[in-house]
Length: 328
Image (tube, rainbow, N blue to C red; front, side, top):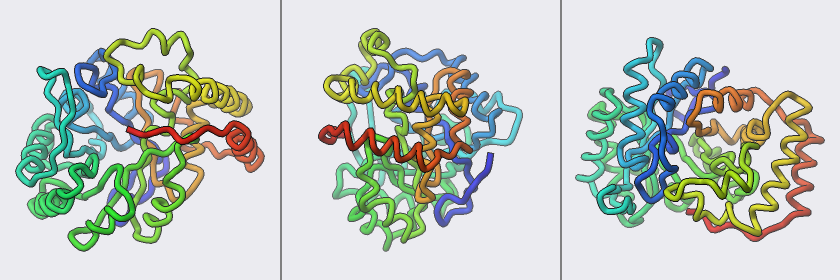
């Protein structure tokens, strides 16, 4: 799999990265229900076998469990260690029902970094990111602390997730921003207006998350499967999994399926390849909980949609308008 530089950093990353949100399991506000740890480890190994060279996780995923599973998988992995990306700023307590709280205070950022290093079993984090710009008045405090952690050799590069252009501009005088992680998918295109051009101008890498909209565009999601989702799977509450959005999305999946079948690709690979069609995107984060899901996604890395296929997708979106969903 080819690699490219992540922004101004020295990190050379593959077009796809493994997202470890779902393998954190359930028990918190945005959990995915139970995950089998051995299967998660096998999934991580399959991703590395298929040449994916970076993993994106966060301490809030499973309230530390995702990082623990990633760490366990790497201890068993005989090959070269992948790049590890994690985050700070969100806190959860399973004993309290898994509700998420926010803090970007210096002491909390430092404590989170140390805990992530322990759970991952490494001495340095390759990319350390602010998960959400909340509380917004603390983003400079967090960024200054992260720059100190970088100088101390505990993190290599600094990034952010879910930031606006104005928020990014506030950070630049303090320390360089290696990357931005925004949501980006066929039905979530807000970043095209300002964020992607700004990142290109500033040399900031872009790692898009939820390119399959948390499984909706994967091709394996049906009404029956949605109805059977565990009670602690956050997607049961998400507006995208409900009408009237759901019918439009499932119709779009059938178009992606038709395109994919002409090339031996899955609908999910078509959806991810669509986000990678622009050089403004450095890489896409793909989530998986089973090894076979990896096999059904890696083809997106080198799949290029034709002009006719891109026009067909655009035509569908124009003729099936729906007001923008309110993001998390």
